[in-house]
Length: 460
Image (tube, rainbow, N blue to C red; front, side, top):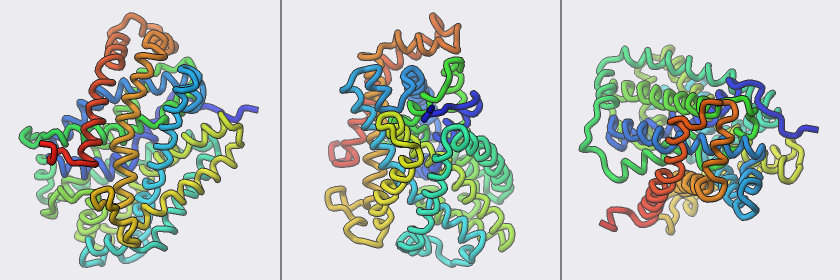
């Protein structure tokens, strides 16, 4: 009996992998990171790093997974030996921890969709105060996050073809339709062009070291790199597919959603005279006030549509994050998919409870003395996403450069792409993975660790 399954088509793989990449990182995190880091200058650096570093890393991850035909742990072990399997486990653990806080934020988005569409959220006078009360309300958060995890589990239980691929084929096109419809509306608002100018006309004086590594962390987070997700998805890809072309399509789709999210949100923000530097609460604090100004009917329609979009984006990522450890237990431990899914979904939900309680509900989780007084959600997000993903990408490229070998990777990439060997693309991918990625990602990882735990300003 085949416990694994696989994608039925190239478009199925691309939409599923793009769905893994497209998520809260694009529509929730990318706009607030852009707003905090200088607008268009951050956007340009993000785009440059995505193509220079992230695209080759994505190609490498998919190639490893397709060659081995196993989960992240099994792939590294098969191609590099037993010790390298621990790098796969590192990625799996990162994915589990990211999903634990990701599901909490997804629950907020789901709750806001319900509150805007079917309740009176748009009648609030102070959305900052409402958001503060909302994230402290344990029972609401518990219910909405639990609902989101249950939906994720039901899709993953169906397997690769009937669950992940089928859901992605529906959700990804729907996501683009809703996003474009909202953008068209946002660009008609007064002062919307001020938001477009902030977003598209760069001020290079805004660039700092923090801008560089923030863009790097954002790119890895939004593309789901460094945690074994694309190794796992790559293991379901047949040998006839052109990995370079598929990876390029996935990267462009991911960038397109992030770019469009900014093109939606900044015109909305500037149309109301709001500051773009609102941080993680940007979507939840600023946008409801904008929807309120649209009137009771249009506000509900546009606001509900936006948070439905956010839910779709989150769900395409939560299913891939859950699939990574599920594949490990199916491949390595031979545990049936259904059992693996329910056990892991329960574990992830429980691991997310401290993050859920860290927004003011419980003081010990809300202010960690060993992490500069930040919350548990901040700690999990920054350690397992901002720090661990670029480090995982660094170690993956080091694995290819020193253990598996760029020659073996080229042989794998040539399958489905007969013109690859000897081409410019082969030289570019090999050189980048052998020399550029390990060095730059290693430097970025060190800078991020120093800044998160010590502070770069204290070292200067």
